[in-house]
Image (cartoon, rainbow, N blue to C red; front, top):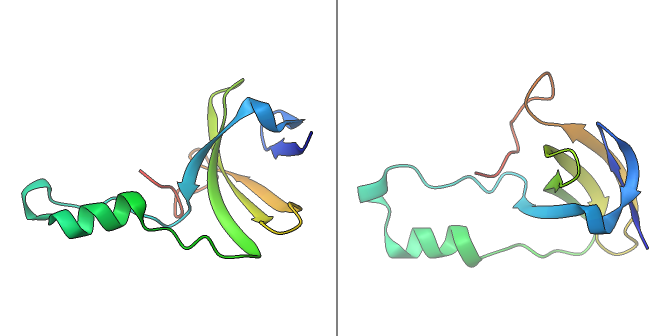
Length: 94
């Protein structure tokens, strides 16, 4: 079992969290102006790179959303940062 650090509740089992996507993957603006290709890229194209990753997660127990910086190879978490009140929303995926 892996522990993820919720910035609100502290370390918890990974089973309590829901992956929200890559941080910085912003939803395309303008409903009528978005092409199928742009929408498909937003939904399906991912970097999936090895190493450092910035991701959006939700802790299902408290309902809070945060950005987690972790290594996808060794699963070590560098930090978790609250989004919203005082935490900023610069990397939040919509």
